[in-house]
Each structure stands twice: as C-alpha cells, then as structure tokens.
Image (cartoon, one colour):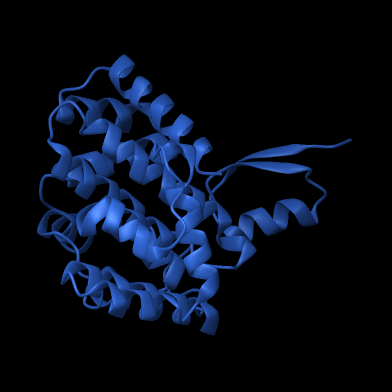
Length: 245
C-alpha cells in the first residue's frame, strides 16, 4: 500500500523513505550537517555570479556594469525577471530586461529579489526542500515584523530569512559566505553571531519547522505575539510563496 512518512528532517532520511517504497514524505529535509556534501561546481558558479551582482547593486554601480555581470549567466537573468514579473511582486507593467528592472525598482528593492535568486539558484533536486524553505522563511520573517517595523526593516528581515539556509545549501559557514556577500548589520548579527533584533524571529521560524509546542510558545512570548497573530503571518507567507511558483 502507498505510504507517507512523516518527520523527515534530512536528505538521507528522505532517500531512505523512498527506497523503502514511500509515496511521499512530510517534513522539512533541511537539517543535514554542514559540509556533509561538497557543493557542486554549478552551485559555486551561481554563488559567484549572484554575489558579485549583489555587491555591485549594493555599491549602486552603473546599470551597464550590472547588466554585463548578469549576462554571464542567462538562466539566472531569466529567473530574476520571472520573479520580478510574478503576481507576488504586484507590478502593473511587465519588466522586460534587467535594465528595466533597475529603472522601475531602484537598487534598494532589487537587492531583495537578488537575495531570493541566490537562495533558489541551485539546480540540485535534493536542494528543492531547502530552497522552498528559504523562500518561506524570508516571507514569514517579513510578515512577523510587519507590525513593528518600517519598510527597511521588513526588507532586511526578508533577506535574513532567505539567507538563513545558505550555509546548508552551499556547504559553507555564514562567516565565509557573508564575507563575499554584503548584507545589513542586523542580518549579519543574526546569521553569523546568533544575536541582534532578528534572532528571536529566526527562533520562531525554527520552532514552527521543528513542530515543538513548547519552543513555539517560548518564541511567541519573546516576540510578545499571540498564537493567532503568528498563524495569520504564516498563512500570508504561504500565499505569497505560492504566488512565486
């Protein structure tokens, strides 16, 4: 009989479940040990190209230089434009080029979508759960801070959530990864130092993924948020994630 296995937390567990005949698995297979797998050359290439693009956007370099950097990988350019033209972004005109995207969005808003592009750049099928989880984390972080932060804080929270699984996807420590990718101070504090104003929000997300009621209550109390408020944020994040498919 077809069976569904719950509680899957690693790729090894996922592969073992399918080997035993499972039709599907439930859980987030994103808990593999860092450096357990070597990153592929394709992953390194994607990281290099997008990290360079983020650095250039952060420095607000001329459009021509940014355009030339992205042309190094047409598939990434296509993916970025697909994200920007998705219903989740809410633009009323179609963005037809990277140059057009910069003109419409500006450098600040573009960094948000480059962060999303970096977290979903891997072509490894086993990384898909982590990529989806990264998108969900970013959108949920943004929703959780919506009531207490301005637009800049919401944007930084989104980047923090999206980047929070990069260490597992690229098999590198955050300290090494973020040495090459410019991020806001609050994001660096949370991911490298496990501190700062965004850390409690990351704790909430991990409690949700771990399905631990006690950790969930503790995280909610720390954020001074009620269960209904957190659940509403989760639903909004999932709807937004679905709009990006």
